[in-house]
Length: 484
Image (cartoon, rainbow, N blue to C red; front, side):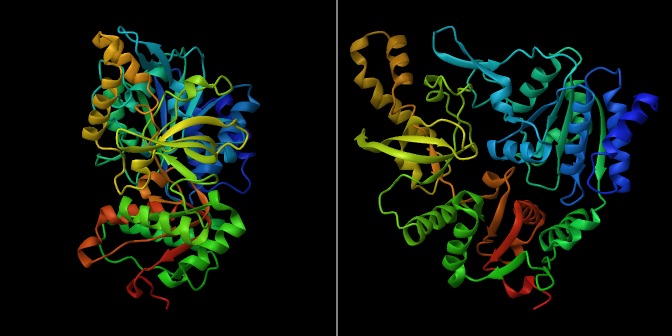
């Protein structure tokens, strides 16, 4: 890495000018690291920015983006989910995309069926900035069939970025948040692992100084204390302070309906999230919200908020006005019209018109939804049920003769391609991760002393840091509150 030069000093001065306050000591060190990173001539240059909530990661990244633009560069902003990309776009001031939509393109496999691969990176000397990097998983080994289910997103991101001439990478995240599902740590924020696996020239900066202005927030004050517990590997019950602050409060279950009604009226349905521990509790909360607050009686109605729970490439391939073909796991949708309901193979389906809830400017498009998973406690349709559905559909195309023709017809069938979605007001913390909402409610579920471990503390820290303006602690025991 370059130690110092007039170019680096000029970059640092410009970046400091984009801060809304005097940078902390940690942010000062970060600016020097970014300057050296930008002008390094080392191959496969990567910078990791890891930091606690409230330490100014977003302010720092926003200042970096504006400085790069001042110097005539066009950084590319990426995030794992649509909601995370929207958050990134809001603080950086330029367009952000999901990783999937940027790096994957459809292609034809040898049997003529749709498949998907890493797109060519045609950019040169471009800085790719990836937020919420703690969410990026390895996802198991690559599948030779080209399906997305078993691809390694981390492998594919590295392949895409560094296939561009002179491109470099910034990974931004908080390693105290939940790791990807099924993994013990966040591989994209593990410097040693990333260096050895991808032959990177990599440096890490860790922001630990909480920005003074942020400590006026009860949300961040308590999140910071949770983070200290994690750093110290303490498994004692965390203690929250609520009375000195007006942005964090506790309520019990009898107050939930009133709190939600007021929150929906103040912020809007899509700006409120209820985070809970299990898919079963999320399902129960969603049904209560639909029936008791929104007065919806049918299984699915116009105005319902949905979250995609399995990647789908079928429906957007037919929409010319939307560039991507991917409806990604975690994407938020709003139902704008119910076209028809029907039943096939003993399963209820609905043809509906939807639009992306995180992009009000996007056009509406039609999809078919499998209603069996919508009201299920399961996170996705089990593989055995998917297989049984595929076999049932194939009987409708038996007259086509060849296995290839039958398989092709099944894969194009609306029922086989039916979107898997859940209602989107209440969700597990993994589903909420990467997103932020003005008001967040946290339901801890049933807790015992044995429940309070470091994994639960990471869950709670991640949930706390989803709230932007108000945090409501639902049904937390008295033992959590030392000031009451």
